Length: 144
Image 1: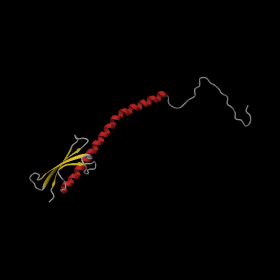
Image 2 (image 1 turned 30 degrees about the vertical axis):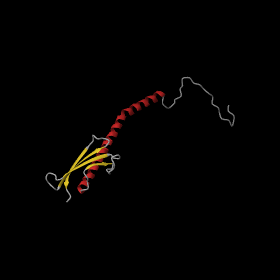
Image 3 (image 1 turned 90 degrees about the horizontal axis):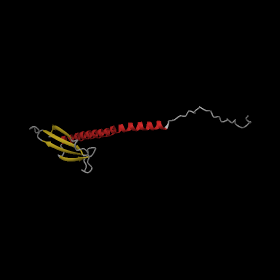
Image 4 (image 1 turned 90 degrees about the vertical axis):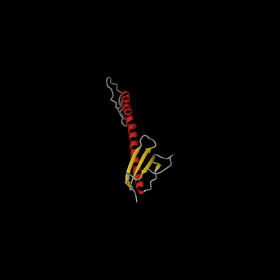
C-alpha cells in the first residue's frame, strides 16, 4: 500500500536462472582484437620503410633532373664554370658543408670537329647516396 506523496517502492525480487544482458566486450575479446591489430601493424611496418626509401629516391631523381636542366641553360648562355659545384635541395649554390648535391661538369669544344657544337656532361650526385650518380650529357649550338 502506498501513501499519498511518497513514491511506490518496488520490492527486491531474486529470480534464479535469469541473467541480465550486458553490452561491451569481454577481456578475452579485447585481448584478441588488440593482438590481431598489433600483428597487422607489424606486417605493414616494412612497407612503410620501403615507401619512405622510394620517396627519397624519387625526390633525389627529380632534384637531379631539375639541377641538370638549370645547368644546361647556364651552359647555353655561356655562364657555366666547369669543375665541381655544391648545391642545396633547390639547386642553389652553397658551401660544401651545407650541400645536398655535388655536380661535376665538363665541356668539350669543338664536338666532332664542328666548332659551333659543344658537348657538356654533368655528374649529379646526392651526398647521402654516392652510389646514385646521375649523368646527363647535352650537345648544343655554342653562342656566337
